[in-house]
Every structure is written in C-alpha cells, then in structure tokens.
Length: 486
Image: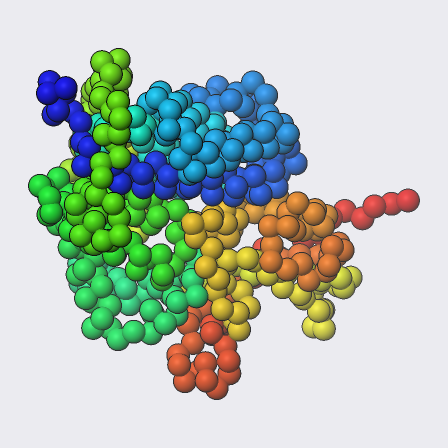
C-alpha cells in the first residue's frame, strides 16, 4: 500500500534476520549463564539469597515473577522456558507466522529475563543486563517474514546503538585524563576486569599503537554514531566501523555479551544492497516483501504506539547525555526501557587481584602452614595460565572479584563466599576452576591482595610465566568455622 510505504523498509530484510536471531542467541546465552550460576550465587542457599532479599521489608518497585515466591526450581523453569523460546527464534520459526508471534516470543523473553535481573542484586548490576532487556523489547516489534520491517523500529534500534556508543564516548571524555591525553590503553588491556587469550599480546604492542587505539576509539564513539542515521551507503559504512571496533574488543577482552550486542545492533543500519556488496553470496531478494507481505492496519497501530512510547521515554537519556553529571548504565523507569549506557570513564592503572587460599593445618599463622590457592575460571590467578575466552558467556563471580580491590573486600557476598568454601559447598565450588581440596573442607581460608602485571616477552621466554605478581597484604585474616562437638 502506498500510504504505508514510508513505514515499510523491505530493503532491510537481512538486517531483521540478524537483529532477531542475534538478539535471541544472546538471550539464550544469558539464560544459560543464569541457569548455571544463579542458584549458587542468589538461590535459596546462595551467597545473597533471593528469598531473604524479598523478605527484607522492601517492596520491589520493578516487576518480577518472583515477587511473591522464589525457589530454585522456579528459577530453572524460567531459564529453560526462556532458552526454549530463544532457540525457536534463533531457528526462525516464530518469524514464519504473523507478526504477533515473534512479538509475543520476544516480550516473553524480556519479561522472563527482567524477572531475573530485578532480583539479581549486585550480581546482575552490569550495563549489558539492561541493554539486553531494551534490545529484546524493541526487537519484538520488527514483525515477521509476512510483513516488511518497520522503519520506525529500525531507527529506534539505531538510536539504541547511538546511545550505547556515544554515551560510552562521552563518559570517557568527561572521565579520567588518560582518555584525553591518549594514554588510557597503556593500561587497559592489562587491568581490564577479565583479560582474554590475546590481551597480553595487545598490551605489549607499541605505545604509539595504543595512542592510535584511543584516537580510533574516540572517533568510533563520538563521531561515527552520527553517521548511523545518514542515507545509505554512509549508514552502512558507519555500522561496519562499529562492527570492526567491537570485534577488536571481542578479541582483546571478555565483556560478556556487551560487544556482541553492539555488533548485532549495528545491522539495523545495514541495508540489503550494502550487505550484499560486502557479502556477495547474500541474496538480494526482499524477504520482508514475501507473498502477502503488506502491513496490516492493526500492526501499524501497534508499532506506532510503541514508537511513540520509546520516543517519549528518550527524554531522560537525552538529558543525561548532555549533563555534566552524566550517569552510566542507568534506567529511568521500572521497565528498563530506553536506558543510558557507558563504561570505563576512568582506567585502572594497576591490577590488584584478591587471591583466596585455604589450608588443612591447625595453626594458620605458623611459618610452615601450607596454603593452597583456589583457582577461578576467568579471573587471573596462576601466573602460568593463559587467560581463556569466555565472552559472550558471563562469569559473574569472577567479574565481582575484580571490583573488590576497587571498592572493599568487606562485601557481604564475599564473606558468604568464604564461608561456603569452609563448608565445601558443592554448588559454590562448581563456580570455580579448581578446588585444591577436592571437595574436602579446609580448616582455614584467607584472602590476600597481589599486584599483577603482564610479563614482558623476555620474562615469558625466561620463566614461562604470563603474569608477574607481588604480594601486597592480607585483606581478610584466616577464618574458620566453629568446631563441631560430638
């Protein structure tokens, strides 16, 4: 119909496929991460139990299915249900039906995962949680293969990517001087929360290259995002730059699904002709304009109503972007929609790691006490070990361990973690890479700070160590459980 041609974007059929399937794949990974870690971290017997949180006398202002009752069994039902829905969307099955079918599927994912995030406390306080929620809600209104992609939703997804990139750029410019004097990446690869297998090599690149990295980052986050709204092929080129810079971040670190979310969102600015020019094997047929592919009036009304809602909610993030007190990774409404994003306004210059150890000896302070170190899956520990690539999978315990020396080791969850180690709690031990006591109970545990830095190439050739570490001080002296009397 000519009267809705302004609304329809049939030349973005491939973009819709990537946006829908990519977002669903990220939901699958996020729910898998929750299924594997939530019970030990936040479950009935977790470090910060959700039942205690819900019973704490506070009424939750944000929606969650667990408002009235939480159980680990219900949590697993939520995860498996969400993973099943996400898998069908990755396979493209709901997209074969009328547009309300994928809409309901994505809204279900949004509600299920929001229920988890809203009781996840500090373990779910990361920016990519609310980013995934906003992506899921917005992508829900891209329609199905029976209708052309709605242009307004594509623009809103570009707007989301703009806020993600430009917000991060503004946080950096307003943050530490290291971003303005181009020295931030002298440190970042070494001190980032969870290095990957290539992080050390990236850190050892020449400093001139690191200065160019910072300049490239500023261009990619402060200039390029404006071109995402330009006509094609400029918008597609801008999206390509975003994808390239995000792939560099994927290769040099572990930031859960943050970088992959930006890559998926970038396709909202890539038309089929641009995608075909880069990937000639892609068909140029307009999938959204399949047989019977006209926009029903009811669907037009639904999408326009959602568009108006998201535009109204954009007032607060816009005001925040240009505020001298810019917030980072914040929501302005209870539904986690149209949020503000940003990260690494300042860069840590030294890496301090909390090392957790246990012993079977009776006297923890004796000179010959044999302390054994617990090994984490992603957090640096063993100086010989090559860091692994975990992203887009999210290791929540390891990430929070990075924050401890920046804030305080005297966190409630960390003391709970140490007591779980003393009790040889199996769900907690499964969060680790290696238990030095093979499931047995240590007599004492302690936490100490170490200064870590990447070994130079010469040091690595001589010792085989990828890290050089130096002990600093004992943060938490030896702890023990009360003796059981028989």
